[in-house]
Image (cartoon, rainbow, N blue to C red; front, side, top):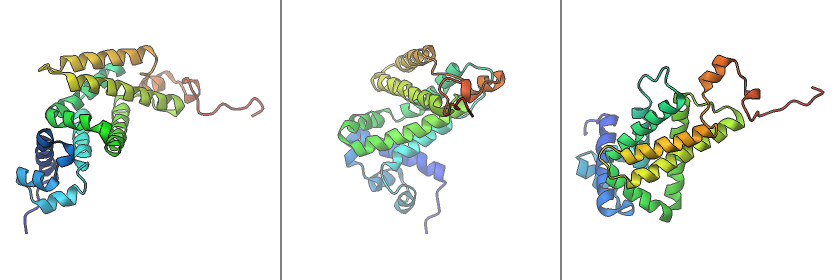
Length: 214
């Protein structure tokens, strides 16, 4: 029996191999058996951890989240924290740039894959928003999360075309998108709200407005 490989080691090796093959041959020709063999991984262990090839993308998203959700941001403005967290995600994606660009080009022809990535991305943005302290309470909080999704999508489009070595075009696009969201009041800090003693009822769009006779 082959000794079990540490899950994190397996993840990194398989993701690197799989996205390299995607960059060479396209998403729809990717075989996880081929990716496992190319990475020197036991196929049975890969099968147990990656039942579907789309799991490669969700695993990469999770690794990007882990890279983002760390560090000391105490005292920094919410906008600056979000900028740092989102750029940390791009730093991870940059390691697999060719394969991920191929995946992005595939999405318009693969609605199921696009839906899966959209769901995984929204989940990641919830983690980023909560870690940064974005106020997600109530209807106004849902709108703020959607606005963060717009910011991320704008930055991804810039990253897809960004050939600069330091991702300066991506940083510029993300910076402008966050500034725009801030101007429209979409970057409201939960911590600031709590410090000032504000409540959900006066935060902009309350969930429930009591009747006058209550």
